Image (tube, rainbow over the protein chains, first blue to last red):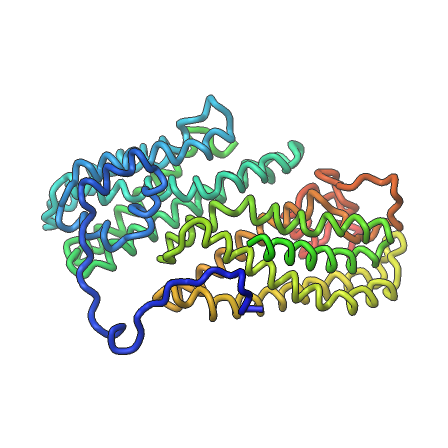
Length: 225
Length: 210
């Protein structure tokens, strides 16, 4: 069963002694790699989700911040559209507003509180760190979009709150939680990103604020009806 | 990939037939189409999410490789279930028929099939993750998590696909050729109008049901 000749071979990884060597430090994304996303949007999946050590290297070193911020902003908006479109053209911007809007509202608090508590990071770095959340959440909503469409299409209207609203809320909550976990993995995987790690109460507190604000934003955008 | 798809379709059809025969020849014949449709449409709806999850959990696969892997898992599950078809067929034919609100041997038959699907699913996933995925994901916990996430997504979506294209066997009287192929959003006997409410009613039965 597992030796089927039609199965594709998977690339082997080096084993034994080579595997035990310490991993070389990840290289930050070059400007060209980041701008290439504009012509090949599927590369955003690799930059935001697939190669988190390299993303973390960019966040730490501050390399190509302007381009990275632009890519993350674009990703937050573009990949949120398919999910939002399922609720109708009038709500096309709602998902981007929900995640990106909430993060942008919380960003000043991260910057100011961070500087008071000794986190010496450039505002662009902090902005890029914060923008990883809406961009990752947008990518997850992109993955959930066909599922949401299918469930929305097949849930009868008389099911009311048990149907598409509940589905939307559950999938959006999943997207936000996965995005938060992704950002934490990015930051805590990189040993040199000490600034935020050493100020974990600030980091945890900010995420709680963000979750609460996202909830209020969802209420404001009428996501629960 | 074509051979793999054909194998999946044939195996799923065989298992579909064996569960359908517990109700009638009509259901058995229709399941030859419906069961492969169930699996293939679930895989299609979840395809994007499978890929996003793979990238999220550090799997170095491209989109096509992810789809091949997932189809491979479904194919293995289908083959294992097809191997159980004769036994399932026998149990389906010999079970005590439902009569009104007395469900007869149906709950046991349903439970047995759920159990069989779970066992085949776990076995297939174990073999796949051991032989195929281990080379492409460094951290073992990510490997298992990826498979669990894939299967959880498939279960959540597959359940609703199942609901839309039911009945596969069920407690209604013997199916006739005139009955519709799919029940769609029509509520079931207990009043559930989608898969998730039906699962809830299985755990907490509504008044008058046991």
